[in-house]
Length: 90
Image 1 (cartoon, rainbow, N blue to C red):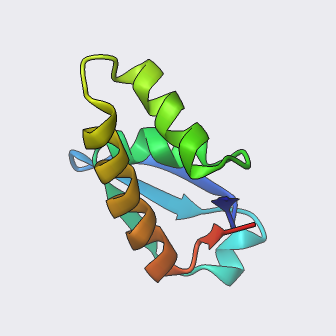
Image 2 (cartoon, rainbow, N blue to C red; image 1 turned 135 degrees about the vertical axis):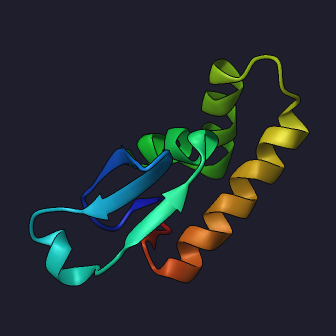
């Protein structure tokens, strides 16, 4: 899976947001708010990865967290991204 559109992330008023840029801006209107973990997941999803690869990459970043907690966080955020229509699932 990976992001369907080209996004940039920025901090705005203390919140992390992703906004589609370039040609993608005409295809996805709006923005996505997220926390710092969501921003890391978003960055990882710029490349095509499986859910297992995503969890392993998160484990490298957040070595103090259990795999179960990271998996739950990833699945929750991925669900929100799927609802927003911004993921490509292969």
